[in-house]
Length: 281
Ligand code: A2P
Image 1 (cartoon, rainbow, N blue to C red):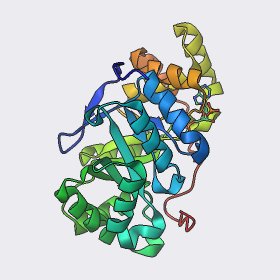
Image 2: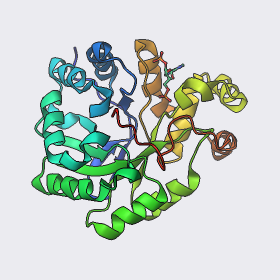
Image 3: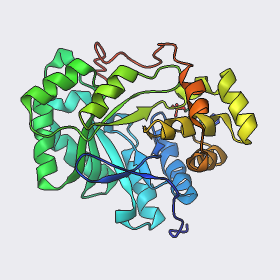
């Protein structure tokens, strides 16, 4: 595999001056046995940012693909996440993720869900702060945190999360949460950015795709980039993997961005973080 391909993806500077490629490749729902091949395809296509989680059970596939690629470590940005059931043992969980990925340093380590019923996320964050201070994670952040979880976290800890990774796509934008994050210096990262494929058939999306000679997924991803979101689409198909990356060169006008933003319906696809406990994670 060539290691010389350069991605044209813009970099976004986090609140601790670390730069994250704004468009990455997410492996949520990529089966463990297919992960190495899928990530190799993504790296070959030019992605340099890969998003996984201990709960996806595919970190070792990501690690194998990184090793096989021969790409220099400093060219890559790797995110993984703390499993819900390990919020009380975050240091050990982090070391396990590093082993599975074959990496000494993780670029971004996130608390996967707040699980407010456990009452552990503040303690978990204090453990992540120690990991960050040790240099083993270049940035730390959260995922699925609602405003009240951010308030609790910020009032009891020192480091402001670098990102909040949340469900975000044209039909479910969480605009108020995004505004709150940005006002606190927390970058907004969109998971299920294509609405798990469901937002790709919306009228304005297909119309703009036709107008620009682009795919519907490229239109939605260009909307995310224009909105300032970090975005991590998933596909297991090499052609789609490549097409999705090429969204970085599609520019939408302000009116086109507004037409996609008007698709908000308030309908969440995934779990509600206020109640989600996901003990299996
Ligand atoms: P597949 O993996 O079979 O390509 P999200 O990132 O919002 O979770 O969306 C992922 C879903 O969207 C998956 O079902 C994926 O299917 C599909 N998908 C990803 N990229 C594209 C694309 N370029 N065109 C159509 N569907 C896509």
